[in-house]
Amino acid sequence: MNKKSLKYSKLAAFTALTLVQLLFSSQNSSDTTGANFDQSLAEKFQHESRFDSSIVYFEKAAKIWKQNGEWNKYLICVRGISSSIIRKGDIPNSLEVLLSAEKIFDKECKNNCSEIGSIYTMIGYIYNVKENYDLSIEYSNKAIEVNTKFYGSKSEKIATSYYTLGVAYNSTGKYSLALSALDQARSIQEKLSSDNQSPLSNTFMMLGLVHDGLNEFNQAIQNYQQSLQILEKTRKQNSQDAGTCHLYLMLSYNNQSDYVKAIEQGKKVIQIYTDLAMPENPNVASAYMKLGEIYTTFGDFEKAKDYLEHSLQIFSSRYPEKKSVIGSLYHLLGNVYKQTGDLTKALAY
Image 1 (cartoon, helix red, strand yellow):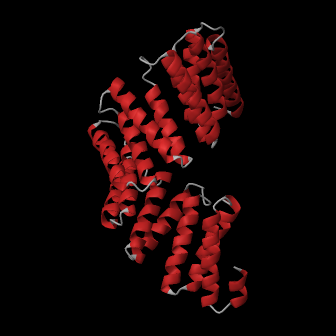
Image 2 (cartoon, helix red, strand yellow):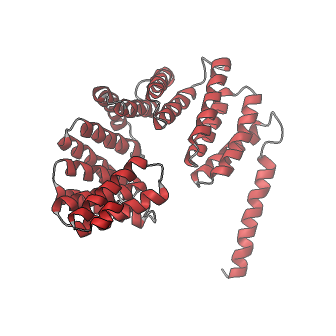
Image 3 (tube, rainbow, N blue to C red):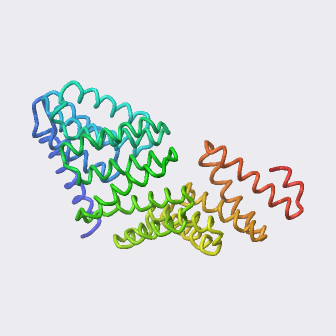
């Protein structure tokens, strides 16, 4: 196909899509066919990471479902809106959307809206991100109760709720409760036959973090390796999840004073994110920082300085809100320059 034909082919495809949107997109308050189409289009845009377009079409569909009293479908759209807002990085507005949906549930459909369980899980997740752990635990437990009622005790939705609960308990240092919740999630996920094993990989990763918190580093390393095995099986060994897991492995090996393996894992973190064209990801900066600390321990101050300066540059320019981390990096660099006899530089840090 020549360039001119390709141009007209693309134009025809675009025109066809536009006509379909005009024909099927909701035209009035009772157009459920159009609302279904809007919702499908919103999900397509979300999958393509076109979040603004996704939000627009979820909102159009939600308006119709709300006017027609289709409350469960309305809540599905609200969840879609919130998910797109989260993926745009706007946590506060996402929470506002979800809390408004909770009010609708309490007023309109207390006994027959199964989707509210997923809404509660998302609220629990957001409160955990906001470090409001008591509310995170409260909503995660509400999600478990509702999802058990509508889906039974062995569904993926229940597993997700237990996972969110485990994350919140880990954040508060309640490790035994975290392990209990995460083991519930793992048990359900292992029994479900699904092509999507990412949730199970994430659960193993979270179990590793809990065991790290308990100073059970061998068990933590085993959990991280189980996570990586799943990612490799699903061809995600070079994904962001894999990068995160390698960073956690690095920290566990470092805690065991196995510095050679820690360095190996740290370099994998950097390589993965470099290949993903994300060289300033915070995980990269954290890997640089830990490598700098390790090489300081080795007395290789030139390498330590290079890694620490790389880390400081990323955190200072991209994540200035990480003030405690940046302060630690200044201290570490000052110590390195002091060890090399460069007191002028040491004082500058």
